[in-house]
Length: 189
Image (tube, rainbow, N blue to C red; front, side, top):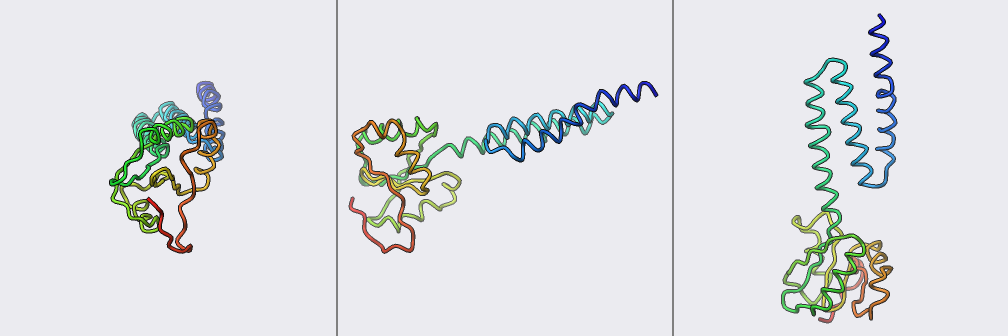
């Protein structure tokens, strides 16, 4: 009886911590904090399983619930911090433009991935590149000459508000990709 009471008293703090971590996990807006909470949640659950005499379930929780899910989550988070910028194969921008974009995205703690595609003179026709399966999942942009057309307003605002963009000569123009309802206006290249 005394041993049972002692083990129950030892488990109680961990049992109380599980729902607290669950609530923190659900309410978290930061992907990094979510990863940390999920890892702690899995580790504490595995500890509880081991303490109540289920080592096989504890091992499964550690391997799948903590390690595998954390690894997949890290890969997912990392891919969200990459901006794919599509450039026209025919007109390569100056190295100065590339360097300016790299500095802007570095300030935003984002990676930039330049991909060369055969673009037309109409940006509305080029939207298909943004929605192809090989590039889905990241905020995207199209770079035509010194015009950077971004897919989302928040990315545009982040770029415009960087110290690098403000202090530069702003030779790069940042604007939203026109939506499908607007008239098809050719973009000069």
